[in-house]
Length: 258
Image (cartoon, rainbow, N blue to C red; front, side, top):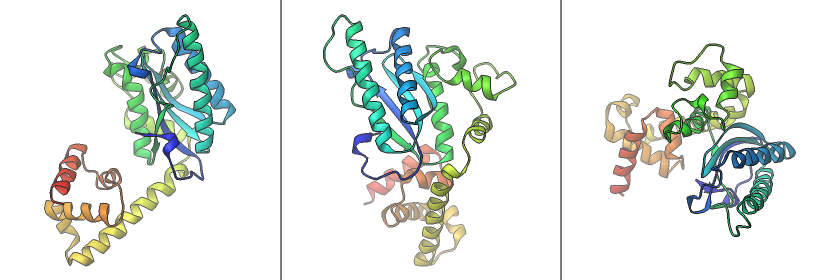
């Protein structure tokens, strides 16, 4: 994760960000229901003011997750600054004049760069209380957007202990946001990777099938795409549909053989 204030590049069009806030020293700053309600109230109010859409959220005891649709980095930065300042003032007052910092950082965020990542991010956010063993099923947790997703999108009851399937989330996306939001990003990266593969094949004088039948060649290609074409490992992994564990093993070998 990276602090949003350190993001150097400009976002010229609407974008999605996974935003996280956490209590300082992992303090349970949202432990009581009134705390969770107050933070959500501030989020909704300020997001509306800065034209930020809350796609998904989950407020836990010591941290909170939000998937936000923004127009500019500046809007997000201003909104989160005000939200956290107001909440810190509220929290300190409710704690009988407590003083000092409330949040670990201003906030941290990660840009959502593909439709797949978008779907997985929503799943991850909604699964937080289940993984923490606070509830057995996502819909049992009051302070997440899961309930509204289920009510607004699905007609059939979900199986017990089951979170939305990939197709369910894709229905949400297609009903809420058009595909063009991710189209440019996905297509540009995929094109860049395909061009990189062609360049690699020509350079190494090999056949395409050898990449998929010889692990050493695949590793060499991934190293070429990362170091020469400046493509991120996560983008390469998504393009080739490589599992996270396998990708970690490959990147480890690449680093060891530098």
